[in-house]
Each structure stands twice: as C-alpha cells, then as structure tokens.
Image (cartoon, rainbow, N blue to C red; front, side, top):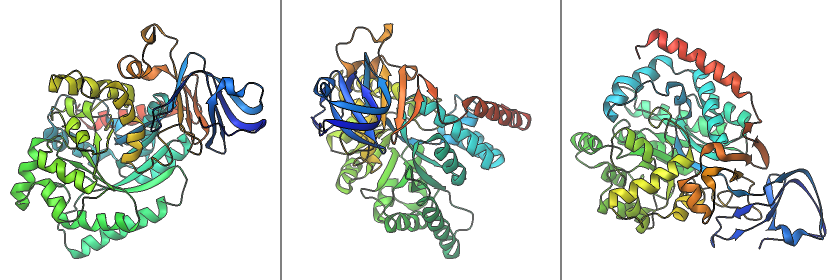
Length: 450
C-alpha cells in the first residue's frame, strides 16, 4: 500500500471507510480505506485498519462507509457554453445541425456573458456528476477561465479557431499572434487551468492554419485538439477540396503526434488506425453525441487493440444533451457490444479506466490525476452505494458502468478542495446561474424560431 505515515499526522481532509478503487496500474482495491489529503495532494493511502493506533487530525473528516471512493472522471471533450442551447436543435443530421442551426445560433448569440453563464451551468452539472477535469473547446476563453476558477474545476481550455474569409500569409500571422497571446495569458492564471489549441476540423480550418497553430502548440508543449472524421461527409468534403483524406492531410502537414487529440474518429479505417498508433495520437470517444447525430460507431475496440489511448467525452449539451460520465460509460460499453455482437468487448473495468486514468493520459495529465496514489493531486469522488439500484454489490466496476447515476455522487473533491458535498455544489450559487441562463433563453427564443 501507499502508507507512509508517522504516528501522528495532520490532514486537511481525511476520507475514512468505503471501497477504494485506486485505478492504479495494478488496479488495486482497498476495503474500509483511509485517504489523507493535504495541500491539494494525496498524502496517505491505506486501510483504516492500518491507521488504528495512530493519531491523526483532520480539518474535515468524511465518512465513506458503504460508498465507493475513486478518482474523479476526466471528460476529454466538451463545449461547455453550449448548454445554453440544450434541446434547441434536436433530431437533425450533423451537417444540417451545424450549418442551419448551431453556426447561426453561435453567430447571433455567443458573447462573453453567454459563455460565462453557460460554462458555469455545465460545470455545476459535471461536478455534481463526479467530473473533476474537462477539456473544453470554444470561444471567449476568458469567460470560460473565469467560470472555471469560480467553480474550482480542472480545465484544459482549448481556444477555438475557424478559418476567416480570404486566408493569406498576413491573416495566418495574425492567427498565430492571437494563439500565442492566449497561451501566454491563460497559462499563468491558475494551477487548475491549462491552455490548448482547438481547430474545429479539417473542413473548417485550412492546412496552413492548422499547421501554423500546431507549431504554436508544439512550441508551448500544449495539446492540439480537433474534430476528426465525425461523419462520412467529412472524407468527401476534404478529398474534393485537397485531394487527400483528412488523416492524410494531417499527416503530410506534420500535425499528428502524441500531443494531438482527435475527437470522434468515427470513420477511421484500419490504415489510419495504424498511423494514429505510430504517431501516438490520442482519441476522445463521444458515443452519445455520435449516436444522437446518427454519425456512426467509432472503431474504439480496434483502436485500443492497436494501443491507441482512448478517453471518453460528453461533447456539448446540444448534441448529447447531458454531461454525465455514468451515462457515457454505460453507452460506451453497450454500444460497442451490440455493434460487434460481442458481449466480451470493452468490459466494465476497461470502461472505468477510459473515464479516469486513460482520459488523463489523453490530456497529458496522468502524472497528476486519474488515479488515487500518494503524491498525486487530490481529484477524488465518493459515490453513495446506499440505494436500491446499487444493491447488492458483487462487482463495483460493473455497478459503476451499468447501474450508477450522476445523482449517486455524494462528494467531489478537486485539487484537495471539496466542491460538492452531500450532492450540493459548494463553490458557487447554482440557482443564480440557472436564473441567468433562463434569462438568456428568453432572449434567444425572442429572436430565434425554435
């Protein structure tokens, strides 16, 4: 075990009791566990039995009896502010959904306030559901950062880029300057905030812009994220425009490497999976969004067989329509079993890893979070198993994937701070945020035909 305690210790938080799923390399479990947290980090992991006879003091002690203690979930892809558009453009195919609804809505209504309140609303939803880290990709990133600091959630903030009209070398240089300014400003704000670059897709960003922004990402050692092969249309659009497939286009422009995160990858073929594996490209799997937009089923089992690191993402609340990793885990497991007609594909334990440590690997922060081990940052959730739908328990991983719900999260800890306790957000006024989002909804409906 990770016990390294003196006879007397002091902690900011002590979590006592419960079934601990460490999600460490050996997937060790500790029944009736003890976790000591100080200065935002995990200082002690052992069984409560090992602590008997020792003296410890804690500013806050959480009794986790009959609960599961585990790492917080890592949401590898979202558009947080889009919760303001939740349910406004449902039951449409991807390209129609984008060009006839989402892009016009964004052009008319996206501003600082919308992004700020929409992001806070999504952060409340995620924290209540045990998501402690999220990779967001959108615009008005200052508003996203402000919301994240208030909520005390861990964020990868991806600054979004589309091609403006009339791209030339002068415009590309201006885009580079904007990206560099963002990285400098965002990278020095908070330990919870990490900047990234997000190019919308190979059909909405030109090769010269993607290559220039990838260079900015490389120079600053940050992630480069993009939607890739979400729909069958993308292959045709990109090939007609450039004479290459989207993956070929990225390959020849030197964009694929271990700091590239491809979101979706529904239409990756066998050769492209091999290319991803060779270049250590990471993948964010967003199954519910892919299902709702009728995009298809990403070949995740084949990716994992090729040793590609795959995490789970919710996507935005317009294409999902919720930010719930329990639901996403259950969907991931069942979707791939039925599509392959193989009940053994992606067992529950693998799914939980995808939602925690593998997600952290996708985002390049697995040395910090994603498992419960001494020295790591204290991003921890406690799931209450005292419920009919979680009784009896033979396999905790199975219950987390196939039975548990977001409302079962009792407590969420991020960076050693309790942000949710007894199913209540502690860092900001959720009711006020809901009120402000409903005001924005009234403005939207007065100008837009739903």
